Length: 58
Picture (cartoon, rainbow, N blue to C red):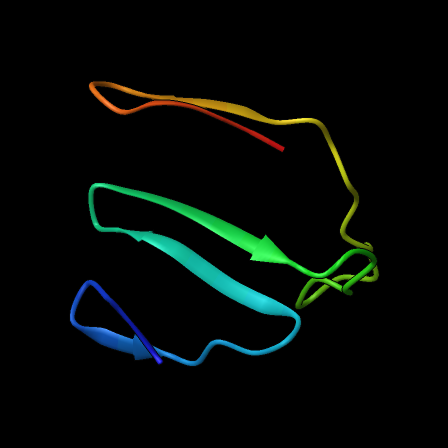
């Protein structure tokens, strides 16, 4: 379970929120079908720079 803005969100093998109310990423399994659509999740290169921490590259 993950607390997000006062609510508990279940983490599964296909869906995981990462962060807090100041910043959040939704990480999902490749080709997961998004709710209310038929779109599959896709993989894209990502670089995140966090002030005073550094870079995270995926």
